[in-house]
Length: 214
Image 1: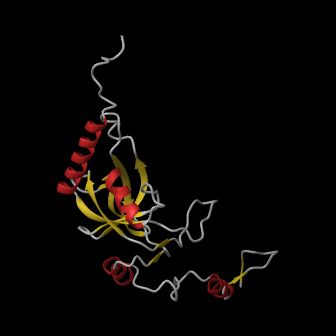
Image 2: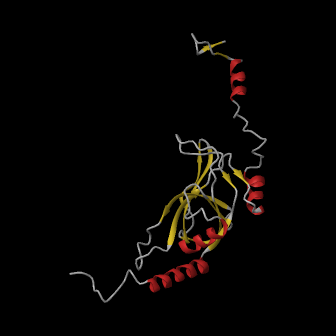
């Protein structure tokens, strides 16, 4: 027996539009204004699947709803052999319609949140990196999808360039987080020539005796 032909649960556009409007209203009432920072690849390494020199040149404000009502998830703050590691995770909900509206006004080439892009949460001054974008949760209410469910985790800064045009974000990163100019400063132990010179003072890198000590 097929479904009742007199009742349409998945093809009623007026009901879908109403549901979409209700979702947008709920996020705008209970959500938080966040900054969406799209990533621009500068020198992508296809072998490792990363680009530590990515650029973030824009910032777009859009409301999102934090699904983690009890706080951040993930491993939290941990002391390891490499120092303090913060591995917070968060799930954010954004309306597909509202996201498209904002991107159409600012950058029509962006049609959905992308893995690697950043979300700035002003409430906690947190930068979250997008790890996965789910587009089928909830599963086709009234036959349509209304939201992006964005899975994020704490962003680990490297040598990315931030020039978003938003002074709050740019000043926070350059003064409080990175605290150095990536264009002129280098990491203390990032120069291999200095390491080689220092090593030559106490180890003889002889081809026939690579571990010989002077």
